[in-house]
View (cartoon, rainbow, N blue to C red):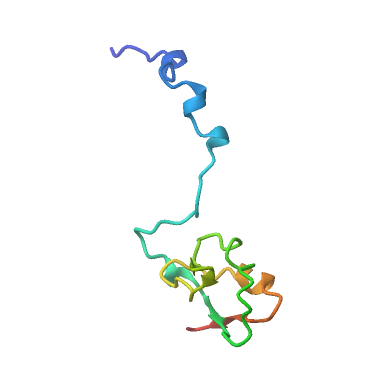
Length: 102
């Protein structure tokens, strides 16, 4: 018969200050290793003439699919975009539209 584990000692060597507060995950909720873009039903398309580079769309993307380089947003990372449309909703300039079948 196996000996029972004393659960009160499981974290004995893990002081609270070494743990992430509230089990928070820092960064995007996706994985760079796996391409998950084929899940989407709609694809974000940017109209570069309407885009003012305000970057309001960048922090709201739950999968960090709007890269910024040298202070300017680049095209969407469609390998990881799920097509949620949050970027379209926050764009005050109508530069982002969600298209079906792309």
